[in-house]
Length: 183
Image (tube, rainbow, N blue to C red; front, side, top):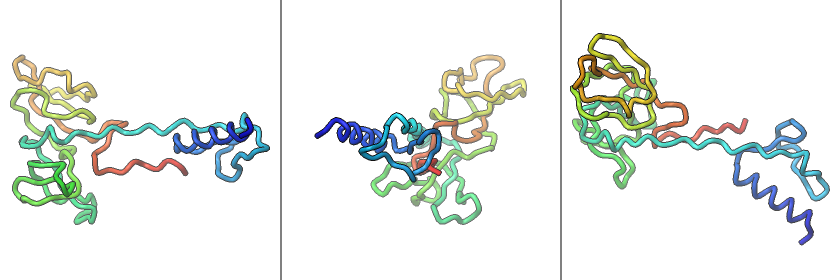
């Protein structure tokens, strides 16, 4: 195999692995793929898209934290039509089982934008959320490092409630598909 063919093959392999397209002399598009006669220095492979981390809902199994359950065929605008507690996930059918309904749902998430009282103990939430905390003195605080805070209620001004706003940047629920940014 000649040197140019090998170089071109390696370029296409890198393009395939990154799965995020390329630019040609500053212009993006699929209209001008390199060939044997192309100067590969004019083609720049875009960096790979960041892969979102998956929020581990198994931490919430058996907890009293309100969850929203739904299926891909939406019953209301949000698609989440049942508020309940999670008792099982990752079962063979890939469904989330609610406590009172005792049936499986395709989608499950922590109830969002709803204050939930906290009675103490370790942090009740998995990593990956934007959270607002309320303290005994009624002050509130948006935090991203909530996992490392003292949730024990052993101090004078301790956490008395929390509200989950939604997934943090770079995080997603297991059932969410990766966004396609190749436009």
